[in-house]
Length: 158
Image (cartoon, rainbow, N blue to C red):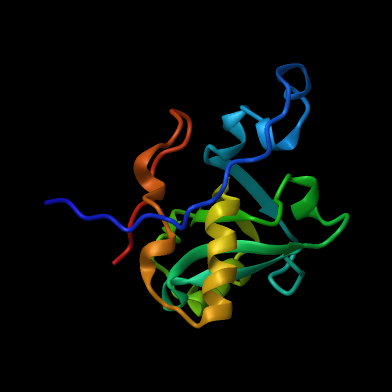
């Protein structure tokens, strides 16, 4: 018997007539925004700000997510947004990384090569878990299940 933990039921969005769906946010069928993408940030010194904050980590039972992006920062210009999940930084996997280790990896580099994806569902689950104090790893799906041809899966450093 196969058992799986399913997310809580979410009611569907309200019905919208077909001719109004194209520009309605609840009916966006453009799935490419959820695919992993490469982002490169360069700063002159490690003491310069990254332009974004993170939350999560394996110690909190979730992936690493961008929780805030500073306006007009290099991060915002590069397209980083709240709800992005960081999958890899400079070939270091962020799949099962402690929050403090993720901060260390990000802050100790001047050339930061990220693989990330927009994943608001996981980000919202990380917020829910923080509020409830829950610390189980069920909030993160298998992020390695699909990578476009131009982005290779992260190398796991043990």
